[in-house]
Length: 429
Image (cartoon, rainbow, N blue to C red; front, side, top):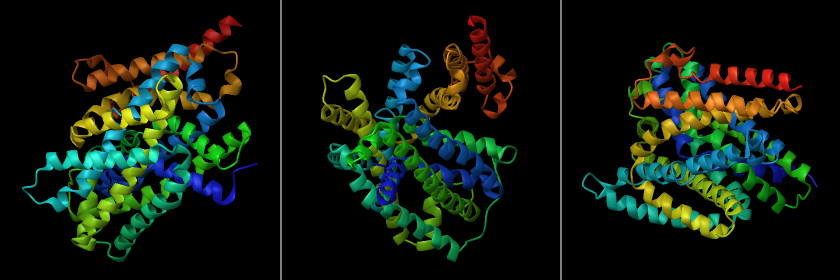
C-alpha cells in the first residue's frame, strides 16, 4: 500500500505544522522589514536555508534509514554525540522553550496592561501551554488527525487573512534596505534562516512522520520512505508560500514603521495598522497555534528518540521530562533563548548541511569511508572556531579565511575536508 491522495496531503500538512513555529513566524517578516527593497533577494537566501535544506534533510534521513544511520557514516561516537546535541537543541534546551516564550509574548502582554505581573503570568501560561502540548504528544500516532486535520488548516487560514489585508490595503510600500542587506542580501537571508532550526529539526522529524504513515496502514519500509519524502515536498511547498506571504507583510511593515525590533514587532505593527485592536487577537491566535503545533511535534520527536536510546524510561516518561524542563527554561525569556541559540546553531548547522549534501552522493562514496569523517572534522572545527570568535575570543586569524566576512567561513574547510577524504580513499585503494 502506498501513501497517496488525502492521506498524503494530511501527513504533509502534519509535517508542515511541526516545522512551522516560533522562528518560522518571526524571521521571515523580520528579515523583510530590514531588507526592504532587497526583500526578494534576501527571501531567496532564506528559501534555501529554511525550505530547501529542511526538505533535503527529510529526504536524506528517509533514504539513509534514519539519522543514526546517516551520522554513523562518520563514526558511531559522532552519531551518538551529534544526534543527542541536535535533539537537545531542537528540544528542551532551545526550540521547545522558544515556542512557549514567543507565543506568550504575542498572546498575553498586549492584553495584560502596563502594570501586569508578567513574570507570574509567564509562569502560569507556560504551565497551561506545556500541559496541553504534553496531552497531545502522549499519542504520537494521532498527530495527523489532530494537527494535520484541524490546527494546521486553521493556522494557514489566519495567515492568508492577514496577507489578504495587505493586498487590500498595501500601506506605504517597502522601505530601504538596511545593514548587510544592502551589500549581500542573499547570503544574509541564508544565514538568518539558520534561526528557524528547521534543517536540524528535519533530521529528527522523520521518526514521527514514519509512525504516522504506518498508522495509516502503510507497512512496507520502501513505501514508508517514499511517503516520507513526498510529505517533505508537500510541507516544503506550503512553507515556501507562507514564507513569501510573511515576507511581503514584513516588508510593508518595515516601510510603514521603520526599524522594528524584530519579526514579532514587524507583524504587530502591520496587523495593528490593518485591523486595529482586533488585529492583536488575530496575531495572538496565529502565534499560539503555530507554536503549539511545533511544541507537540518536538516533544514527540525527542521523546521517541531518547526512549529508543535509553529505553529504561518510557516514551511517556521522556515526554513528561522534556515538557517540565522546557517549561522551566521558557521562563528565562525570549531574548536570552535566542542569544544562546545563535552560537549553538552556528556549530551544528554547517555539519548538518555537509551530512545532507554528502548523503546525495552516497552511491559514489561507497567504499570511500574517510570522506565523511574528514569532511565533518574540518567543518565542525571551523564552525566551532568561528562560534568562539563570535563569542568574543580574539581569533583574528580567522578573518583571513575566504567567505568569513559573509558568515560562511566553514565552506572552504568543508570542501577541503571532502577533497582530503577522497585523496585518502584513493591511497587505500
